[in-house]
Structures are given as C-alpha cells and as structure tokens.
Length: 125
Image (tube, rainbow, N blue to C red; front, side):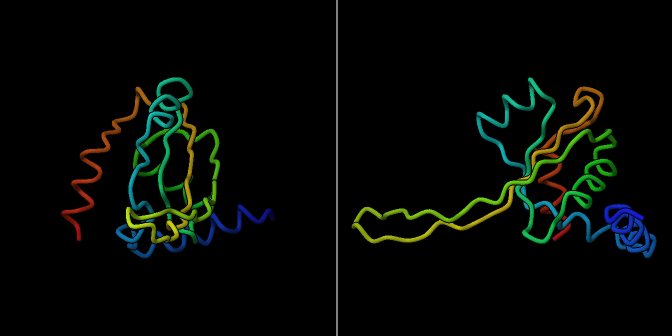
C-alpha cells in the first residue's frame, strides 16, 4: 500500500472519532496578496499559511471537505526567516512559515468567502 494511502486511512480513523473541530486549527489564515489574487483568478489556486506539521495529504483532505471542491494539486513552500531592521538600526529576524498553494477544479462553483471563514474562526476560539 502506498504511503499516502496509509496516511489517508489514519486520517479517516482520526476524523471518525468526532475530531472535526481540530481540522479548523490547521489553517492560520489565507494568504491574500496581489500574486495570490492573480493566481486565484487565472489558475484557480488558493493560498494559505499552514502549520509546519501539515502535509500535502492533510491539506488536500481539509480543502476538499471544508470548501467542497475537487483538489487537483497541492504545492507546499517553506519560507526562511530574513533579517530586517527597525528605524533605529536594530536588527531582527522575521518568522518562518509554511505556505500551501492549492489548485482546485473550479473556484466559481465553490462557496469560498475568506471573510466568513476568518469570522467563524475567531468566533470558535
């Protein structure tokens, strides 16, 4: 049996135990920039900031369940920290994070509204 199939089976066992609320913690927030907006309009790609422990199988499963769309591909990017400066010249490092770029069949058919998604997330905490 393939490794991703085993992960999906373990994930289904996890979800069968009424743990759906834990899946909402996987996404911190959607990544909304000019580039991601262009990708959303031209290539049907949604971008999210996800925790470091999230893998492609879990991200694909979550998107397909929450937004009820068919996921075509998932790309994951680990960003590195960078040096930045305050006004006084002091340096600090920016945080590292993990981005997920999810290409779906069609965004138009899905009911995706990031504002509602963020409001629901704040209300649950």
